[in-house]
Length: 485
Image (cartoon, one colour):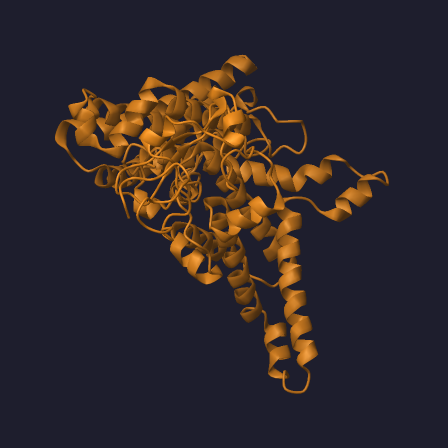
């Protein structure tokens, strides 16, 4: 192809090049007189066209004030039409891949439900002479299981119907309150893991940081008498401080000695577990008086987290704290100088150090913030898990630290995605309990669903291969880009 391009769009000495979808005038031709509709445009509205020598790709910059839509230059962006939705699905956008991953996990979960139901298996034994009964039993089993899961996690149509006939309106929101309560610690531990991911650190110590926050919050909750509002605020600050200390310790050791944060956090998980066990076994520490079991005293009523909207009691102010923390993290990462340093260190620590950023200081600060977030995750469990909240034991921390990793993965280390992923996992946990109570399906199916969802989301090429999607340009494959996002 010739280096010169005529103003009409064709090369001087050759025919049209099929490799070029459209051409523009050369710099010398651009200064000549222009005819046609382009001449009628105001000077400021004309598109600026650049031709690079010996290149087959032409870069066109839209005029000021115009936004380029997927359909082509000059189309207004923002109209969510059916064509845009279809194209986003076909091209495998991150949102489409996530939704298809959840769908694929539910399909495989349905298969597991079928093979674990003895009634369905007996129906399939007679498939040769009664195929309709086999398909009917399969559908009834899967529909009953997923319906029970939905009603246990979101709402039940029967409670809505009874509310219109004199029943309790609060009962409508009871499943949602259970989901919110289950999701609240996951939001905070997911944020703890996610913000460390953005700096290139792998925080597996959300469990130890959770324990640190729960020890301080529980001790402040039962050992002191304060006015209600002040007592809650003191416990919140105590849980924050307990988690910050554990996170700061990891960051300081990494910065000063070069020790890997994965080893440090894993070891601290064991250290904090046995420290909690020791404190709960010592009468003068955290053990409840006149009690031989490892159990702490119940916190005082003035330290209870306030209920959000009154009854049912499961939804408490911890959820508002989690949403506020997600908003603060989002602002910190996208709007602050410190967040810019976090992203720069996560992208390339060597380049960040060359630019004058103190990488070791960033490690310490981000791990302290991550620890504080995980410490706050103990609040809804220790101070708001019922009336009264259950006392602190060695099983209080549960699997929140491990689930925080999966939530951060599913949410792609973004605060908004982490909140949605935590709500999804909270709904699965709550709905799985209701499903196991109402159907013969074991609750362990929920753990399989969670694992499949994370597996599929973490492997976008697998979803694109299964559903025959195109590769989306600019997609966010975490495995390819790294956790720093």
